[in-house]
Image 1 (cartoon, rainbow, N blue to C red):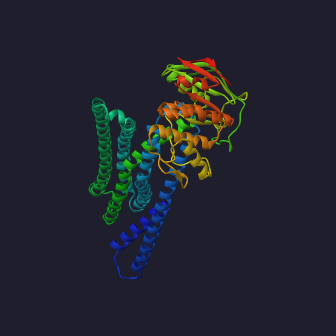
Image 2 (image 1 turned 90 degrees about the vertical axis):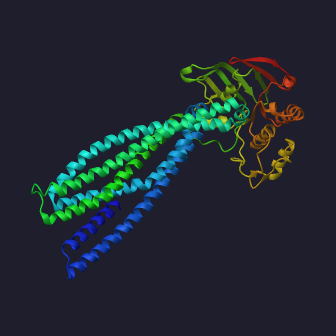
Image 3 (image 1 turned 45 degrees about the vertical axis):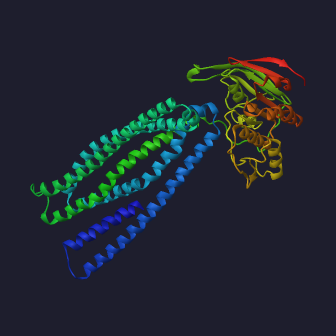
Length: 519
């Protein structure tokens, strides 16, 4: 359709040329008018079809890209996702896709203009071959310089994208660490200065890129000004063109100013789009490497008799240079109430992530009923667990639970003593703006509704008042065990250690059995 539009543009130009150079009142002029009208109508229709169809396909492609990356994120190991970082993911899925959506019209117009230029040059060759050679020589030389300057602008855009990721990270620090920032004037001032420096540097780099792109645009205009001047002032002087053809060739050059202007204006859009595509493809490659398995979890929670870690080692940091957890040997049996305690930084949270297959062992094996958890088995293993981590995220809707009875939800809200704080209507909680302890109780409600074989709690009782803390250890955990559930809880509440069937201690990445209590 772009070719049809470009061809019709030249038909319009040639009919105008013919009508202007050979004015008459005979039938020839009438036919020229009919041809002009038909070509103009087809051109408008083809342009409309081209733009609507192309823009629709661009949005569909961006949607497909976003959902493909969402699927890969769903299948990532947690450590791989942490290494990629939220700034790179959010940037590629939002800012860069928006860049492609906004630059698509300019790129499309530039592409259509390029086709029109090809047709115009063919028409110019038919009019005057000498004019064509001179125009191509000037434009070809200018194009080489043009591409060189555009390449430099693209390289600068890649640096700007990296700088914008740093800016995103620093603003995220401000938002997520707001309490700490608000309570420390020195920290607040330093963070503001840091963000200001990054923002200023980003602004300067973006301005420099925009200046380069403007210069590229103006250079493109200069090329065709030179071509037009050469046709008018050089060719006649050397006797290389006929005077009667000069007007037509100049008309063609003047016509080319429009398409060439569109093409050069599209150069900045192309540069921005290419930089955005590089960021998006880089994220795609990273997520593709990090994604594991098919992403299809079993329809119903699986059962188990034993989950085991065998000589498992996991080391944080690049190239194994950070804190090491392991080697760990741990067997979790159905019906266990396992307490894990230890100092800050001893590796407790890492142990939970290994046990739940959020981290895969770098050495050793994770086994469920003797089967090694690897690849597609990872989702089946994770389907055993309902969790409330210390850094849990509370969804307002009960995603993945299907239809849940309102009475069942109300029963658990009452058990957690938050029935007066929130409720559930139309598949969503009335509010999740609760205190930290109440939010944890609501997270436990969701975990209980999942009704999976193993419950994992990371410092759940730490934010509870004494009365509910006692209820958690003396009523909720025994009730879960009575229902055949297995519990793994990280806790420092030593007065309740005897409620566990087993108590383990983490110390500098190593796991030891502290004592065994009543069964």
